Length: 126
Image 1 (cartoon, helix red, strand yellow):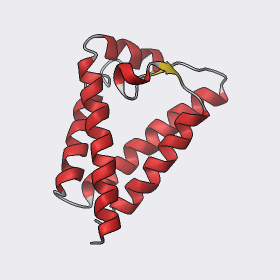
Image 2 (cartoon, helix red, strand yellow):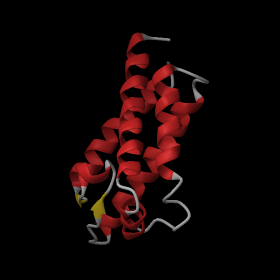
Image 3 (cartoon, rainbow, N blue to C red):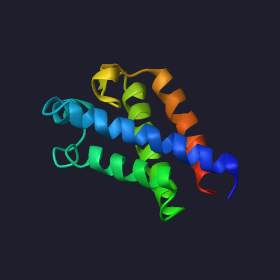
Image 4 (cartoon, rainbow, N blue to C red):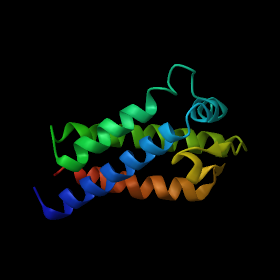
């Protein structure tokens, strides 16, 4: 366990907690935004809770490395979805952080997710 890996785990964990909580704060608007992004209807209600659990376990360092593995998987999935939309010329609203990020996706979202993905990989060693 290195300090760098622990800090990376906490940073990624806090990001997931913030993302999940902000989605829940949107209430019924979040599932609508998720569907606009192309998520199946059954996925939208689950995503914020998955993010909250992943985030909390990363922050408190429980059951490592599995929360970090989950974070890497979720970030890879989200990044692939963003890249697919951009490659197809679509720019749906990003609801990544609820109302705080209700703007069309762009290359900046890929950059942000890549940075978070790098931190999540570092967190694997926490």
